[in-house]
Length: 171
Image (cartoon, rainbow, N blue to C red; front, side, top):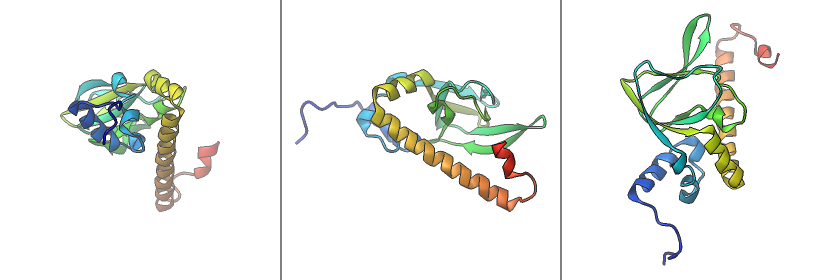
């Protein structure tokens, strides 16, 4: 039997929970935990070639892709080199989950249009400050995400040996 005092959610909220549960940083959360983020979410539409943010900008929000494709690029000698394509059901701007960070890449819309959900950094921090369990779940997912990126970086380095020195990472 269902607890008569437990919160019930609207069909729209359940749809949002289904969406969020597919995203790396929300995958460990229960519906009531994901619900804490809903009031902070802003829906934004972007057009092809629009820049969501530039490298070195302050990391002010996490972006969730409802529809569209985003290219994450780095500046290499006056050119933008794509490091990753982000699609529906994925997130980017993940370093906004940390405090006092700057963007490490530029995010550009490459599809005709993109629908993004934006969660501001200050709202993320408010949820984290009031619920350490949620913060622990998100930080665990973030650590896994960065670990996967390191594995890809090192694999790429091994495959292209000689183009750069890994030692430079730590200087």
